[in-house]
Image (tube, rainbow, N blue to C red; front, side):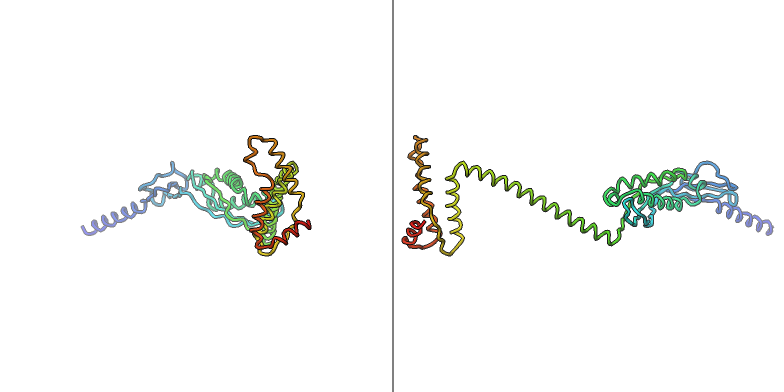
Length: 298
């Protein structure tokens, strides 16, 4: 009786052990590829608790999450003969678990090797300016180059990003000088455009003053007043008598042309008197004899 009980307990333990060895758990982001005697059986196993036959079956789990794969920096020569080092990052995921296990030995290693060769190819086909400013288009081209062979492995390339472009120190200095020269060129262009516009304004002002000579004489008096206000020293200015005669003629012509407004307009003598008074106030105390002497001398 004791021997039978011992045998039953031993048999129960062996069965429990055998069943325990056949229990597998497939997580939500995984799929299980079942091999029986070395051959794939059925479709990939869905997430949950799965049973296999120990020794006979083997369940290979495949991760379906997006994998981030850094691509080591690759050195190459661009189309415009510049040596650069470029690194990238590849985002991919398995879409066909059976093909990823059966058709390629290590799909992650295979994707990494294809990414490195594709990156070197992109470097050789591109110019330096494209690597620095047109990365989006290069990323798309690199993605197509890697995805083409990866499709046969049950792998889908979601995205490829070029991260860093390392340049030789000499090239960095050359680019810095080029950028500085470009900024200087733009500054000179802006200055030249400003001078060009100012010259046109001066030309227009010259035409106006040529048509109206009195405007030039009045501008001269205003300039004298401004200069006198800025300087503390005595200002000696020869006053042309012809200016008085010119203003007198201008005032007479204006009075004859506008009969209704003759009383409202000031004569040239009044204008000159007002400007002379301002000039005298700005220049400072001076004796009348000096002023009369300077006017007589001119």
